[in-house]
Image (cartoon, rainbow, N blue to C red):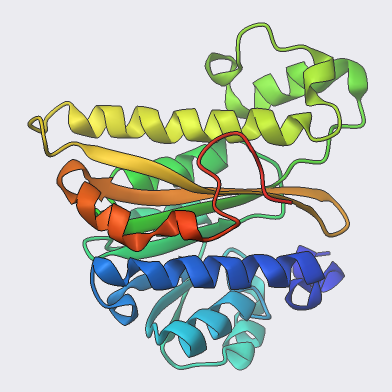
Length: 258
Protein backbone atom coordinates (compact mmCIF):
# COMPACT_ATOMS: atom_id res chain seq x y z
CA UNK A 1 0.00 0.00 0.00
CA UNK A 2 1.32 3.45 -0.98
CA UNK A 3 1.84 6.01 1.80
CA UNK A 4 -0.81 8.33 0.35
CA UNK A 5 -3.35 5.52 0.71
CA UNK A 6 -2.55 5.15 4.43
CA UNK A 7 -2.08 8.77 5.50
CA UNK A 8 -3.90 11.92 4.38
CA UNK A 9 -1.10 14.41 4.86
CA UNK A 10 -3.40 17.28 3.90
CA UNK A 11 -5.21 17.13 7.26
CA UNK A 12 -2.29 16.30 9.57
CA UNK A 13 -2.15 19.29 11.95
CA UNK A 14 1.65 19.58 12.28
CA UNK A 15 2.07 19.26 8.52
CA UNK A 16 -0.51 21.98 7.91
CA UNK A 17 1.31 24.33 10.29
CA UNK A 18 4.61 23.52 8.62
CA UNK A 19 3.24 24.43 5.17
CA UNK A 20 1.97 27.77 6.45
CA UNK A 21 5.31 28.61 8.07
CA UNK A 22 7.18 27.76 4.88
CA UNK A 23 4.75 29.87 2.86
CA UNK A 24 5.33 32.85 5.15
CA UNK A 25 9.10 32.48 4.73
CA UNK A 26 8.78 32.23 0.94
CA UNK A 27 7.09 35.64 0.85
CA UNK A 28 10.40 37.13 2.02
CA UNK A 29 12.04 36.02 -1.23
CA UNK A 30 10.49 39.01 -3.00
CA UNK A 31 13.75 40.95 -2.56
CA UNK A 32 15.35 38.54 -5.06
CA UNK A 33 12.50 38.97 -7.53
CA UNK A 34 8.77 38.46 -7.76
CA UNK A 35 7.85 35.33 -5.82
CA UNK A 36 5.35 34.40 -8.55
CA UNK A 37 8.32 34.10 -10.94
CA UNK A 38 9.73 31.17 -8.95
CA UNK A 39 9.48 27.54 -10.01
CA UNK A 40 8.08 25.20 -7.37
CA UNK A 41 8.95 21.50 -7.44
CA UNK A 42 7.60 18.98 -4.97
CA UNK A 43 5.81 15.70 -4.40
CA UNK A 44 2.11 16.46 -4.90
CA UNK A 45 0.88 12.90 -4.25
CA UNK A 46 -2.93 12.69 -4.54
CA UNK A 47 -3.64 15.71 -2.34
CA UNK A 48 -1.42 18.49 -3.80
CA UNK A 49 -1.79 20.37 -0.49
CA UNK A 50 1.45 22.34 -0.74
CA UNK A 51 0.84 23.12 -4.42
CA UNK A 52 -2.62 24.49 -3.66
CA UNK A 53 -1.34 26.67 -0.82
CA UNK A 54 1.67 28.07 -2.69
CA UNK A 55 -0.32 28.69 -5.86
CA UNK A 56 -3.16 30.50 -4.10
CA UNK A 57 -1.04 32.38 -1.56
CA UNK A 58 2.05 33.19 -3.63
CA UNK A 59 0.62 33.12 -7.18
CA UNK A 60 3.28 30.63 -8.31
CA UNK A 61 2.23 29.11 -11.63
CA UNK A 62 5.40 27.32 -12.70
CA UNK A 63 4.93 24.08 -10.76
CA UNK A 64 6.17 20.53 -11.19
CA UNK A 65 4.96 17.53 -9.20
CA UNK A 66 7.14 14.43 -9.16
CA UNK A 67 5.32 11.13 -8.77
CA UNK A 68 7.10 7.78 -8.71
CA UNK A 69 3.87 5.72 -8.81
CA UNK A 70 3.46 5.50 -12.57
CA UNK A 71 0.68 2.91 -12.31
CA UNK A 72 -1.86 5.46 -11.06
CA UNK A 73 -1.37 8.30 -13.54
CA UNK A 74 -5.10 8.72 -14.11
CA UNK A 75 -5.71 9.25 -10.40
CA UNK A 76 -3.02 11.91 -10.10
CA UNK A 77 -4.17 13.70 -13.25
CA UNK A 78 -7.76 13.67 -12.00
CA UNK A 79 -6.78 15.08 -8.59
CA UNK A 80 -4.47 17.74 -10.05
CA UNK A 81 -6.14 20.98 -8.86
CA UNK A 82 -4.57 23.40 -11.38
CA UNK A 83 -3.49 23.11 -15.00
CA UNK A 84 -0.28 24.96 -14.17
CA UNK A 85 0.96 21.88 -12.30
CA UNK A 86 3.04 19.75 -14.64
CA UNK A 87 3.25 16.08 -13.73
CA UNK A 88 6.58 14.29 -14.09
CA UNK A 89 6.54 10.52 -13.51
CA UNK A 90 9.47 8.44 -12.36
CA UNK A 91 11.88 8.32 -9.45
CA UNK A 92 12.95 11.69 -8.07
CA UNK A 93 16.55 10.76 -8.89
CA UNK A 94 15.65 10.48 -12.56
CA UNK A 95 13.25 13.41 -12.81
CA UNK A 96 15.37 16.00 -10.98
CA UNK A 97 18.26 15.36 -13.35
CA UNK A 98 16.10 16.52 -16.26
CA UNK A 99 14.46 19.60 -14.70
CA UNK A 100 15.79 22.99 -15.72
CA UNK A 101 16.78 24.90 -12.60
CA UNK A 102 18.20 27.93 -14.39
CA UNK A 103 15.45 30.05 -12.81
CA UNK A 104 15.05 30.72 -9.08
CA UNK A 105 13.34 27.68 -7.64
CA UNK A 106 11.85 26.23 -4.49
CA UNK A 107 12.34 22.49 -4.10
CA UNK A 108 10.60 20.60 -1.32
CA UNK A 109 11.77 17.01 -1.08
CA UNK A 110 8.96 15.87 1.20
CA UNK A 111 9.74 12.20 1.77
CA UNK A 112 7.87 9.84 4.06
CA UNK A 113 10.89 7.54 4.29
CA UNK A 114 14.26 7.71 6.03
CA UNK A 115 17.48 9.42 5.03
CA UNK A 116 19.48 7.34 2.57
CA UNK A 117 21.79 7.66 -0.42
CA UNK A 118 18.85 8.27 -2.77
CA UNK A 119 17.81 11.32 -0.73
CA UNK A 120 21.38 12.61 -0.75
CA UNK A 121 21.52 12.11 -4.52
CA UNK A 122 18.42 14.27 -4.94
CA UNK A 123 19.99 16.97 -2.76
CA UNK A 124 23.14 16.82 -4.88
CA UNK A 125 21.15 17.00 -8.11
CA UNK A 126 19.50 20.26 -7.11
CA UNK A 127 22.30 21.97 -5.18
CA UNK A 128 24.82 21.34 -7.95
CA UNK A 129 22.84 23.52 -10.38
CA UNK A 130 20.42 25.71 -8.37
CA UNK A 131 20.78 29.43 -9.01
CA UNK A 132 21.16 31.99 -6.19
CA UNK A 133 17.89 32.96 -4.56
CA UNK A 134 16.64 29.38 -4.61
CA UNK A 135 15.38 27.39 -1.64
CA UNK A 136 15.75 23.69 -0.81
CA UNK A 137 13.73 21.88 1.88
CA UNK A 138 14.06 18.23 2.88
CA UNK A 139 11.59 16.33 5.07
CA UNK A 140 12.38 12.81 6.29
CA UNK A 141 11.22 10.22 8.80
CA UNK A 142 13.53 10.26 11.84
CA UNK A 143 11.77 7.72 14.03
CA UNK A 144 14.56 5.76 15.79
CA UNK A 145 15.14 2.28 14.43
CA UNK A 146 13.50 -0.40 16.58
CA UNK A 147 16.65 -2.51 16.35
CA UNK A 148 18.40 -0.55 19.11
CA UNK A 149 21.67 -2.48 18.98
CA UNK A 150 22.13 -1.88 15.24
CA UNK A 151 21.04 1.74 14.81
CA UNK A 152 24.51 2.98 13.91
CA UNK A 153 25.10 0.14 11.46
CA UNK A 154 21.76 0.72 9.74
CA UNK A 155 22.39 4.44 9.34
CA UNK A 156 25.91 3.77 8.08
CA UNK A 157 24.52 1.38 5.46
CA UNK A 158 21.84 3.90 4.46
CA UNK A 159 24.03 6.99 3.95
CA UNK A 160 27.60 5.66 3.71
CA UNK A 161 30.21 5.35 6.43
CA UNK A 162 32.02 8.51 5.29
CA UNK A 163 28.99 10.61 6.32
CA UNK A 164 28.64 9.22 9.86
CA UNK A 165 29.85 11.60 12.61
CA UNK A 166 32.99 10.27 14.27
CA UNK A 167 32.38 8.53 17.57
CA UNK A 168 28.61 8.23 17.15
CA UNK A 169 27.00 5.68 19.48
CA UNK A 170 23.66 3.84 19.50
CA UNK A 171 22.41 6.10 22.31
CA UNK A 172 23.01 9.17 20.11
CA UNK A 173 20.19 7.96 17.85
CA UNK A 174 17.56 7.58 20.60
CA UNK A 175 14.48 9.83 20.89
CA UNK A 176 15.14 12.94 18.74
CA UNK A 177 18.81 12.05 18.41
CA UNK A 178 18.22 10.58 14.97
CA UNK A 179 16.82 13.94 13.83
CA UNK A 180 19.87 15.80 15.13
CA UNK A 181 22.30 13.44 13.42
CA UNK A 182 20.36 13.48 10.14
CA UNK A 183 20.25 17.28 10.14
CA UNK A 184 24.00 17.34 10.53
CA UNK A 185 24.51 14.82 7.71
CA UNK A 186 22.24 16.76 5.33
CA UNK A 187 23.79 20.11 6.22
CA UNK A 188 27.32 18.75 5.72
CA UNK A 189 26.28 17.27 2.37
CA UNK A 190 24.92 20.62 1.15
CA UNK A 191 28.03 22.48 2.27
CA UNK A 192 30.28 19.94 0.57
CA UNK A 193 28.40 20.39 -2.71
CA UNK A 194 28.88 24.14 -2.58
CA UNK A 195 32.54 23.72 -1.70
CA UNK A 196 32.83 21.88 -5.00
CA UNK A 197 30.96 24.58 -6.93
CA UNK A 198 33.04 27.32 -5.35
CA UNK A 199 36.27 25.72 -6.49
CA UNK A 200 35.90 27.43 -9.87
CA UNK A 201 34.42 30.72 -8.63
CA UNK A 202 36.28 33.89 -7.76
CA UNK A 203 36.40 35.34 -4.26
CA UNK A 204 33.36 37.51 -3.61
CA UNK A 205 31.17 35.35 -5.86
CA UNK A 206 31.03 32.21 -3.77
CA UNK A 207 27.77 30.26 -3.49
CA UNK A 208 26.52 30.22 0.11
CA UNK A 209 23.84 28.34 2.04
CA UNK A 210 21.86 29.82 4.91
CA UNK A 211 19.85 27.34 6.97
CA UNK A 212 16.38 28.67 7.75
CA UNK A 213 14.36 25.64 8.85
CA UNK A 214 14.91 22.89 11.39
CA UNK A 215 11.46 21.57 12.27
CA UNK A 216 10.85 18.59 14.53
CA UNK A 217 7.29 17.33 14.66
CA UNK A 218 5.33 14.14 15.08
CA UNK A 219 2.27 13.24 13.00
CA UNK A 220 2.30 9.53 13.75
CA UNK A 221 6.09 9.33 13.40
CA UNK A 222 8.96 11.63 14.28
CA UNK A 223 9.76 13.87 11.30
CA UNK A 224 12.52 16.32 10.47
CA UNK A 225 12.40 19.19 8.01
CA UNK A 226 15.61 21.04 7.25
CA UNK A 227 16.08 23.66 4.56
CA UNK A 228 17.46 27.00 3.62
CA UNK A 229 18.43 29.63 1.10
CA UNK A 230 21.05 29.37 -1.63
CA UNK A 231 22.61 32.72 -2.47
CA UNK A 232 25.61 34.41 -4.01
CA UNK A 233 28.15 35.93 -1.64
CA UNK A 234 27.51 39.29 -3.26
CA UNK A 235 23.83 39.07 -2.35
CA UNK A 236 24.40 39.24 1.41
CA UNK A 237 22.63 42.60 1.58
CA UNK A 238 19.56 41.10 -0.12
CA UNK A 239 19.55 38.24 2.37
CA UNK A 240 19.55 40.77 5.20
CA UNK A 241 16.61 42.57 3.56
CA UNK A 242 14.60 39.33 3.68
CA UNK A 243 14.53 39.74 7.48
CA UNK A 244 14.07 36.00 7.99
CA UNK A 245 15.12 36.50 11.60
CA UNK A 246 11.86 38.34 12.27
CA UNK A 247 10.03 35.03 11.89
CA UNK A 248 9.89 33.15 15.20
CA UNK A 249 10.32 29.72 13.59
CA UNK A 250 13.56 30.42 11.73
CA UNK A 251 16.47 28.27 12.95
CA UNK A 252 20.04 28.78 11.74
CA UNK A 253 21.69 25.86 13.54
CA UNK A 254 21.05 22.69 15.51
CA UNK A 255 18.34 24.27 17.68
CA UNK A 256 14.97 23.12 16.36
CA UNK A 257 11.43 24.42 16.02
CA UNK A 258 8.83 22.03 17.48
